[in-house]
Amino acid sequence: MSSAARQREWRQRRYSERVPGVNGKPFHPDAPHGRFTAYVNFGCRCQDCADANTRVQHRYRKMRKEGML
Ligand SMILES: [Zn+2]
Image 1 (tube, rainbow, N blue to C red):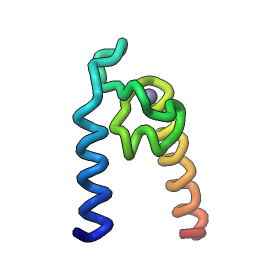
Image 2 (image 1 turned 30 degrees about the vertical axis):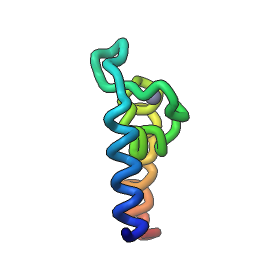
Image 3 (image 1 turned 90 degrees about the vertical axis):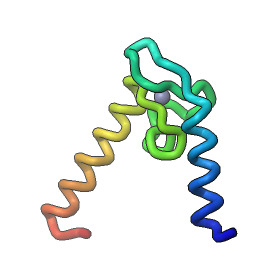
């Protein structure tokens, strides 16, 4: 199995472990909350993780605009 496929499988398992969060969105009990990796790899959508994702998206867009990517 390729490492990409393994990564996908691992992520699917993490996603399936999520429970409904206080904000009504999926929440992963073991995710490193407040980090982009929690949002992407654990599929956690709690406020902290959503904020982390927003920050990364903003930074990414800014870098695109400034021609750094
Ligand atoms: Zn979270």
